[in-house]
Length: 322
Image (cartoon, rainbow, N blue to C red):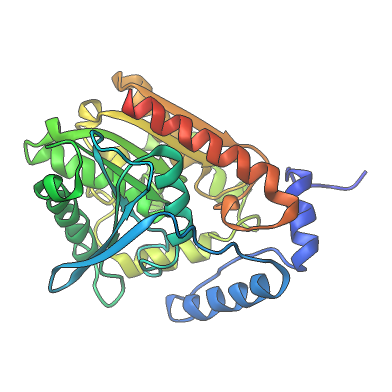
């Protein structure tokens, strides 16, 4: 019997299709080159869908350092909270274009206005620069509810990977600032929730995914160390490690996901446990057999898994919006 290493057959078929397992290893100076090389392989073997033109977009420079992109689907009729999005990329990669197609689909599927945030990147802009931008974008979205045609004084934070971390951290910062009543919910997909060297002693036995999946996923331990070092900050800072924050119980409804073959699997599972323990209404999904960010690879072998991911994400937003 072939050793599948715990992967879903569809994922192994995808790896065979492109002839590699996408992985980054660092150091931070080389991560961009590694990422571009993976992208070149994907473009060679896969057909990426064109962005849905039916979703209206507008870029706005809201501060000298910060630009956002606003997504408004044609089916949007108003009366919903604004959704503020933070992109992936280990706090060091990514921009407004990287997840553009993904956000068009989410805006249309859910029927909401999304404000995507082009926060400043590490290592050129270490913590808290990018985080400050995320908080600023949240407040800007609230202040511009009339022009966005969104519910006044209500917002959802939403992010993927490092952006999933920023969605949690921003929500907690807003709570600490006494503005928790403005939070409608948090959508955090495959996030970082705790610095690896700051996992509480009593939880270390439940934090084993870095070792178990070291060579299974794009975000290898070496890559995650490179990203964390570039981002900076103290791992015990509760905005670096939301799992350590003392006001988790004040979070609004939260939808959180993790991937079974991911170094960050236990980041998601431990935060889900913290939400349960503190009584925060939450919904979660685990993508067993898949590594980090599996939904972003438009392979024919992954079409069913991608469809399942988007269906579950839409239900996650539905849970938040109820």
